[in-house]
Image (cartoon, rainbow, N blue to C red; front, side):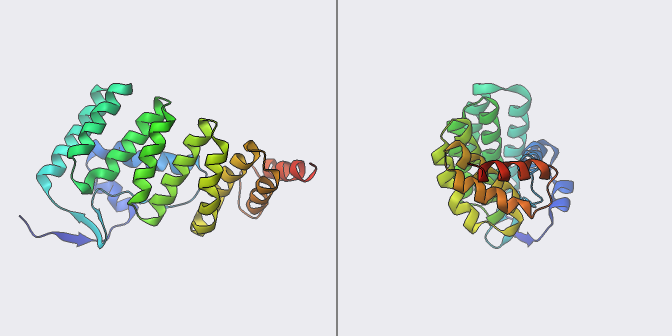
Length: 216
């Protein structure tokens, strides 16, 4: 086997050199970043390892890449999820993040939020800090969509204390939404107030929510 090479690369370089058939997983992360209204640099790499980025086991990687592409082209709905689950079982560890992202995406598209939350949880368990925070946000979103507001709040409260500053906007926005839905106006107000000092395209809405909750 060829000697493994470790190299640090930025997100732009990763996207440039990433095989076309796994672009969708990368683009999904970027889509979620925009959905959560954040400027975070979500790092997704098929070669993620403790010491950095590594590309190894080219044969297994190419097989996973090609299978991902084929599944995306040929399957949809529950059939797609089933095929992705089988792929996850045999994929090399270096490719698991990409497959989990596809599974979370496909499950949310199928409105199977419980299953999507499981995949976000698995991704968060073995990822770098930024990706783990993003995955926790994905899990909380699924819980909210299921109407499990208190559970979503339980995910977001500790996240608001531990997440890097770059996540202030997405974490507190979801925290405010979950707290208000769970009937915890004080927690919702606190989260909205933290957003007031942030550059927001909908600043007037945030100010309105603060005023509304203070009037309760």
